[in-house]
Length: 393
Image (cartoon, rainbow, N blue to C red; front, side, top):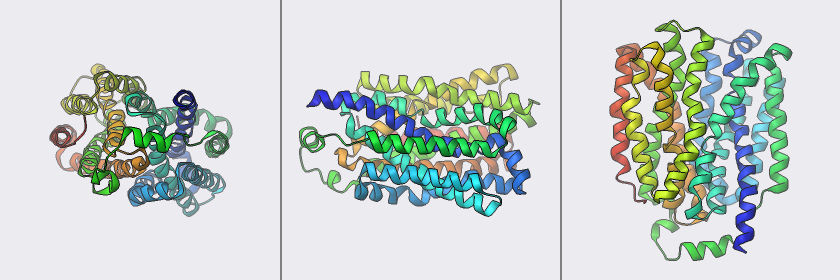
């Protein structure tokens, strides 16, 4: 029985990873064609920016309820709802001819991404036992980077040949295919109840009341801080390179993408390290400490050193997410409560995504680029201290 479960878990992981990519594919289809979309729909730059921030706003609103949704509907039906929302929202955007319709489409897509960010790691937690969970979590943690890099690579070419709406056509069709794949091949493990009894016997109160577990909330606070840093770098580094270092827009985007490319390599490695040393906390501590030490470097080094510092910063940052998702599953004790844990972690993620650009923008405006970057250091070190209060190995 366990052999059958392990074999199909690999299939499940491939499905989950490909399905997860549908969310950032839909999220990041805007930046590569933003100028053309603004011209076509008569949008201001503020309105165009809102097309991105609405995802984070929906995440904050739905992250905690999503835990109850997933618990009530189950992972498969919740996944169908999530992919359905992404697909419907993308189709509406594809057919939109004004800003109001486009914003509605983005709100619907935001619902889908929020649910995916809870369902996917919960499914991994259910299908992989704790001792085998770190590596798939590490690989899955590249989902946002993989989807965003894909869109940054193909969207400009599609826009050149078929116009900016062809990007919405691609995201719609990709999501539709993933919906059919998910319906056909995703299922829950036959041994779920048995594995719960074997792995987590006992009557720990926190396992029966997942939302009262202090450690998961502390981990979510760490994730707020982590995402503040990530969004600050991803949002403002291109502008810094263009304004302060006279990079061309194309070069500024390419150099900034190195921060994300690093995670494609390091996240799986971090998952493997956590598996080998049997400690999620040590990996998180290492990642957040060295990321805090390097977060200001891209803003102070010479032009030639900026790519190297972004790769270095992205590498340390990439250690945090896979260990955090694995730690969340471990903190929640029972696989059946994984959805609740992931929803709390997602709540922290979306708060960080929303606060990060606004906070860093204010710091830049009032203190300048370098001082703003330096102020990220104590923020990150606060997260480092919080990790010590998380009750997980």
